Figure 1: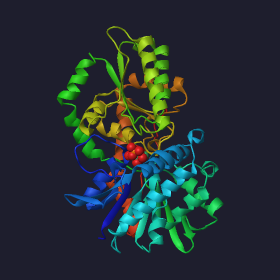
Figure 2 (figure 1 turned 180 degrees about the horizontal axis):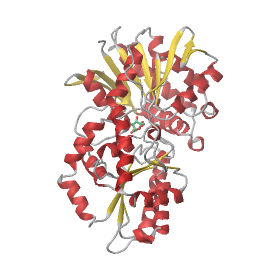
Figure 3 (figure 1 turned 90 degrees about the vertical axis):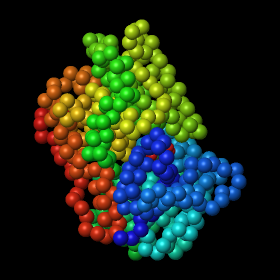
Figure 4 (figure 1 turned 60 degrees about the vertical axis):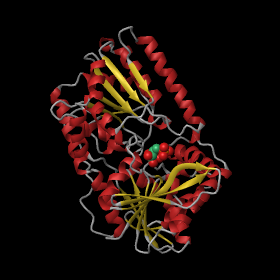
Length: 471
Ligand code: F6P
């Protein structure tokens, strides 16, 4: 089998840390299974010309990383990637802060990655590039003469062309995707959107369903919903609920039901809207007051970006207001914490929570939703409340699907979830779990790499409609 080279901005060098962005969570096990190279940024910012790439070999994976110049990091990561692409791809034109300087930094870092990859790549390597930081990387590699198979997977949403075309210089950036062999997206909607963009803006010919001819290059667009290690997580959660940490949390609840939310502190996650929904729940269903505790774990993220400081302020203030309004000396309705937790701690907390509250305003997939399902006790499972605007809603159709912009409806869903009879909880959980076992992380990586390497595709993704009555 050809060597696999994964490229992404972040590289998850195993160090026992608690960083848990979706991308690292997904790539690490997929790469470990096959072995290969993972190339990207070391996480270090430097004021001097960065030295040579460093390699750390752990088992069958070489982690190759480079430092980043302060200006490059500012313009590429804090600037174009996270103040322009991130909001626009999450349908938030109102938050995009475009500058030509940042766009220049974005292309410069892609060139820098391509230059470093040049010393690394062998002619028969298969290259798998991840996420919105690296849209033009294949073009930069092709310009240097690399003919490798190169695939691109975007972990976040892709909006319709009507929104994409509001991105200044989109015509310089998005058509660069035509230098990949396979472009993978999370959902049919995302894939449909990029196909429509290719047809209307690039005027390329659709040669067959989901494939385009970019100046003689056959470019395939496919749907590859990223999964979790469903069965391994279920096993981990069974053990984790017995740990001293989870026992201590459960003891501290004094028998109250727990609702859990786990998100990076990001405006796309809909945290203020969710807190308002919790407030609506306490207002309209007062019998639950004093009987339920909502734990919201929200590690800070992208702290160098003003919009992230803003959302941090809003969430902190809203949490304080709700606790001030409803709290008692003996009961704090909402526990809001910014500390990151280990995978084991989270698995145990998910299993202990009666309700998993996952209500992003827009999300490529949302692996927390899938992890919550995987972690449940099948005999007595909790209920997932899931935003219809998360990619995970395409598969977890037996969750209580909600509109995160409607706090009263989400508040009512919390009430419904807490009071749901055991038989219905079991039926909903079993449905979602079955789908997530079939569409797990191995399946995701296998399907993508088979498409890229031209091998016969494994079984298609399972989208199983729920037949039972009710939403
Ligand atoms: O889900 C999108 C994503 O960019 C992932 O790639 C990453 O794991 C996560 O968000 C965290 O983002 P950052 O690398 O900016 O901390």
